Length: 104
Image 1 (cartoon, rainbow, N blue to C red):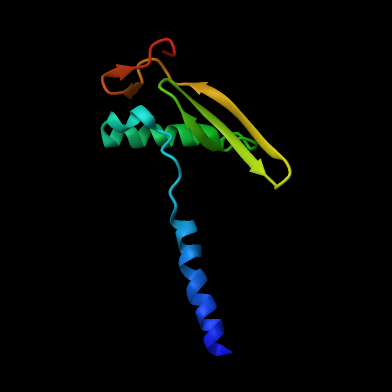
Image 2 (cartoon, rainbow, N blue to C red):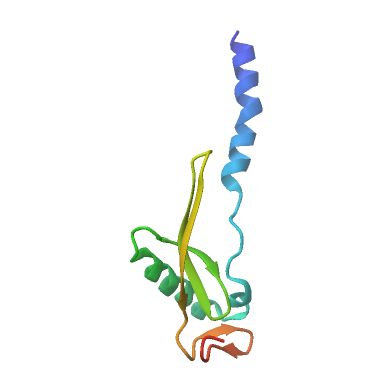
């Protein structure tokens, strides 16, 4: 009996670890070309802006000169996706040799 229990535990342990270690999608796209300090500062500012809204607290999408805060809920029957776009300020670096001007 103990051997069977041991085999079951050993069999399913790697599966649960693999599921936990999956990384999320890279939503930062063009920002990978920015210097690390600049990139981290932008990520922090966008996450801060998103955290100010109680119903859309997550940074879910980053485009060149805008980002979307939102939330995605799925209870198995209903999938709810909500979000709001925010523009980056003019002069903000947004990629390799690119800056935002007029949200473009």
